[in-house]
Length: 73
Image (cartoon, rainbow, N blue to C red; front, side, top):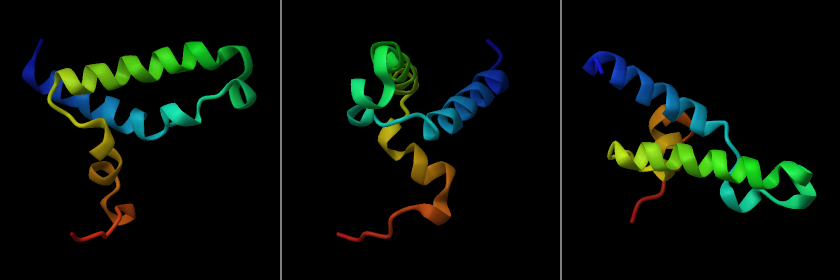
């Protein structure tokens, strides 16, 4: 795959991941019969990001730095 395309695809996945529900928020109550499918899809995207050395838990702060937490420790 072309390096530029690969980079663009990862950026697109990072952006899309920001709009996905957190795994612990995916419940039968909230999502009904689709909960298992949604969980699998979120885990799939997480796995692809991790396989490209991207920490999914840091993506939101990277994509939206103005909304990032300002904690300092």
